Amino acid sequence: MAHYMLYLSLLLAPASLQGIHAVDYVVTNNAASTAGGARFNNEIGHTNSKQTLSSATNFIWRIFQQTTAADRKNVQKVSLFTDSMNGVAYASNNEIHVSANYIGNYSGDVRREIAGVLYHEMTHIWQWNGNGQTPGGLIEGIADYVRLKANYAPSHWVQPGQGDRWDQGYDVTARFLDYCNRLRNGFVAELNKKMRSGYSGSYFVDLLGKNVDQLWKDYKAKYGQ
Ligand SMILES: *[C@@H]1O[C@H](CO)[C@@H](O)[C@H](O)[C@H]1NC(C)=O
Image (cartoon, rainbow, N blue to C red; front, side, top):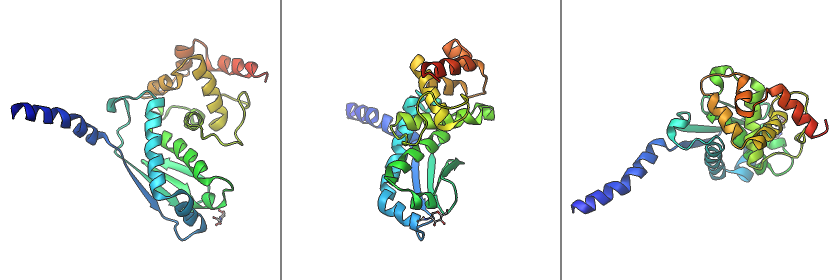
């Protein structure tokens, strides 16, 4: 009996620990009466989006090398809303809001497009922002870097080497971060870890031995730009 109890507690301990840290995903379609809201239900779906949210979280933890709960932001629940609104999507307060108008007007594989959007927005939920000091272009670049690495980059994105500034944001910065990560595997994870408490341009020097302006020049030169 004693052996059995010991066995049982060893078996249950990891499960209950995981239970404490599991993330809940809640999906609400606030625009079901609109064409885009109906398209969300028909072509994307409630169950599929919950799966995408969960896969995105696991992917992001892996990209950021966050293997334990102590490494991660303390988020228990992420809510996804489909709303009648302009724009594409945004994340705030552990909520992701996606535009039903965007879904309704999108031409092409809308399920794949919204999966890419969700990977981007979910990155905002989990990434560190240097206590608000990280440049906005870098924040958006990291979110699109995750989307790129998940193979959800849309065809209209800039090609590697294109763009005017390293911190232009979105696809431009994502392509540049991909270059940096090829120089040092795990660079984006290390950069995100450093941004847990603040931000400094010296992080690029610390990790890659060159300042970011030199890295941008090297990157442009590599692609003949
Ligand atoms: C397309 O976008 C416009 C402007 O946001 C919106 O009024 C319209 O309902 C959208 N169309 C669909 C089919 O969702």
